[in-house]
Structures are given as C-alpha cells and as structure tokens.
Image: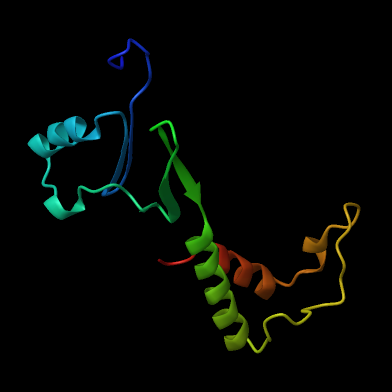
Length: 129
C-alpha cells in the first residue's frame, strides 16, 4: 500500500473465526469489501477496544499522529479472578503458600507438581471471557 505522501506500508487483516481486525490507514475500505461477501453487523464496525482478549487503545500525540497500544489488564484480571475461584473450590486460599518448594534456575519445580496442580494451572491459563 502507499500513503498519500508516497510512504509504502503493509495493510493487515487479522481474522479469527468471526473476529476481524483491520490495520490500515483506511480500514473502512477493506470492511466494505468484506461486507460485499459476508454478513456484518453494522454496530460491530467500530474502533476496537479489545481483540482476542487483549486490550487495545489509541494514544494521540501532540503532532497529530497516533499509535495503537495493546495491553493485558483485563485478561490478567480475569485470570486472577478465575484463579481465586479455582483455588477456593479446591480447598486452597489465595495468597497463601501452596508448598514449601522454592524455585531456582537449577531446580525444576514441575518435577514436584502433582497431576492435579498441573491440570489446575492449565485451566487457569485458558480463561473464558
């Protein structure tokens, strides 16, 4: 792609199932092409605030330019909330030591984990939003 000043850049269209994120100077042009072939809810065509669990925001600068920022505050918040629920359900207390094992680079803590702790950790990483 080329901007009006001749600067060349790439346009990106990220698609995951029914989530689309278009990164371009004129994303609505691409969205119109997509709408010609697929059903799109008009209210879904907005500047994004999140994409696949990541927080998105636009930072404006004094010179009129802007940049998109990506964060994980909401995702991490949900992981912590789910962790607290899972720990309570399994009889643990949040913010309490689960074992006396301390990590060091020469000691792999995974060797001391039970199947139950491993399964619980996997559940916590893949949260439902």
